Length: 99
Image (cartoon, rainbow, N blue to C red; front, top):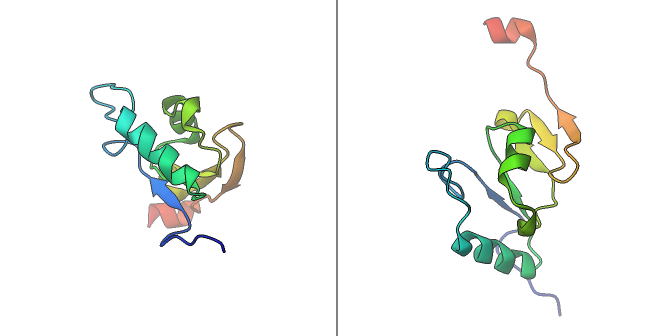
């Protein structure tokens, strides 16, 4: 019998959620432990942030084992947190930006 969960994916924000960029504090042990526990249940964990892909990659320690694509740049970029490759990107047309 397979175990079911009330959710299929956990998406976490960075600034003010799992990191405090103003204090430059590391991700807490409680956050590490919670992410590991969710992953152990077989639920993927990723990041959704207004920050750039590079920022996300530079602020997420490798021991969190976040390997699923991340949502970056206000949702305009989907990227691989391990390799840094952009998997999908949406550009706002200039006419729309000026409106």
